[in-house]
Image 1 (cartoon, rainbow, N blue to C red):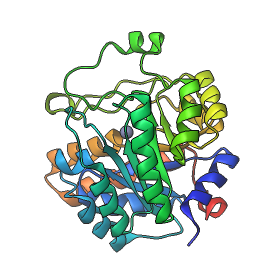
Image 2: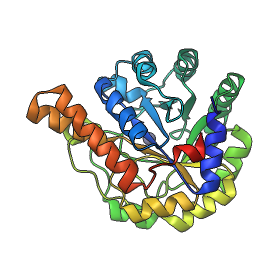
Image 3: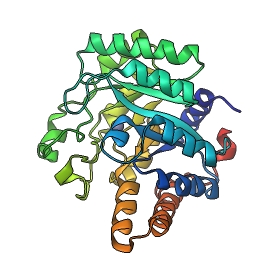
Image 4: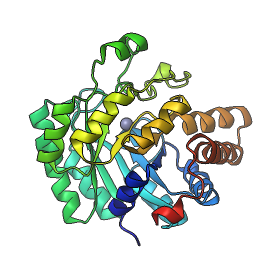
Length: 300
Ligand SMILES: [Zn+2]
């Protein structure tokens, strides 16, 4: 099985990206895998702590069990998304325990999110997790800057947020962060936002976020590692495609397939019909939106 770190490096050099699909409900996993295989693409299946706390993913073990039922190493790998050091509700998390559990379960890569910490603390926490992951032969993703949206309540007006560059990952910090933490992939804030997950907001249509592509280029140069775009749903296609050429090698997709599943489940009452909707949407994302059909041969 080709090493995931090598696959991501290869994709980065080729200006391609790996979509990473979040799984908040277990029945979504099979149609996502099938869509990626049918598009002959290469993607990550991922789950974040909030998806088993605030949705119905069950836990890292339940997602791993479902993944290994449907896995196809030529097309999909399993990633542990956001394990925050401090979570969206400002609670401290025993992040090392969750990461260790995922490594034991056979996850192929992990993410620690220390982005709510001060820079030095984020570096220290990330270094701990990177060492743990590297001992198991796995790549480690980290986050620097504020990708907002998971917190409760409404976001500040998006245009103001974008114009001010508030929360954007800083170029000098990105350089130091990667050098000192040893992380393999870096999630950056360049205008992207997470889909809302708090009760009253999670069904809302996501804002069409823009990306500061010049800033992205500078971050890629300074950090020297493949960059990750969180909050990939709802970003206009021209920004997404341009970002793949300027350093983004992994793009996280949550809201777009979650809302497809939830809305069809609600209207039809049938899990299988909702799974069909997830399959269709994933095929469209991979093939049409990201232009990543037939990329598995380049990567595997
Ligand atoms: Zn994220």
